[in-house]
Length: 396
Ligand code: ATP
Ligand code: MG
Image: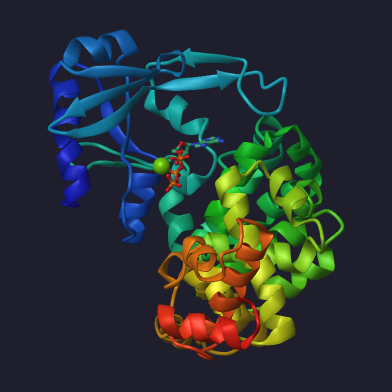
């Protein structure tokens, strides 16, 4: 219980208890504490209603009061405190129609997705685990709280969460949980793409991505994910590789390279990624195609720039099943005579002055030729040398 992050949240539990309410650490933080994983956010559950919570603390923010969540600001940190609640009637398969506050912790734990996420801990270290989450943690098992079919038909996102926990924790699915996922996979079509993307990103950043992807394939969840439904074989090939070294964007690069053919932009857009992210991944795919066709060379590195080059080097290593050569790629990029057009010792004005010609498309053409000659080390990046060279090519 002396995890530094939990310690910081201690005063919150104590203040709620002192005011006569129950308060517990719940959810991911308790799970991660037992797994010795880094804890990145602490969820606190309490018997106090949101308004009662607000009377106990000085600085609070209503972040999701209709769901019972109040944010508490304490010593520069923020903590989410959520009133015990149940959720009734999921008529649209994604969000409960109605949130009801309840006074019992057990009711609250019952609505949670998996046994490992349905444990609670008190300030004195007392541990509450009505669904044997601890045992499932020890057995590295993902198991729904209660009937898997019911839980997935209530909220289909939970199936994506199961796949991403399989990847993040390298856990297995309990048999009933797996079976229900096969059956209820089509319910995933009711889930907003943004929420699927959020889980997919976590899956693709996990330790055991191969496992997470295999879950998507074996349960048929992939059939209800943008651009993946016809791609069982390609996905299985990806899942058969060693993917540990890749981050989420490099994984997207690999997936888009393997499944999206000429439709990378559409593929990524269908996943509702931000324009900036699409641009970055797209550039990676374009670069990777060139690398596969042309091999690495200086002009390619120069045009791709360092980020896309490193991403490609990492993905290429996975495709070829060998160690990454990104260190070589970085040193080669660093050794380039220039890294950017701005560094070229030549401007449009130089060209007009030397030739006496008017502004025109020829300027751009000369700049590109000089740039290539410098990058390829035909000439040095030095104004007079460039001038000489342009003259010798009859360009001035
Ligand atoms: P992470 O480490 O990614 O934050 P987490 O388990 O904390 O994992 P959150 O999305 O932060 O996941 O949710 C906090 C807790 O809320 C979960 O541990 C779980 O108890 C509950 N929970 C979250 N999403 C659902 C859901 N769709 N259905 C039921 N319970 C959920
Ligand atoms: Mg969390």
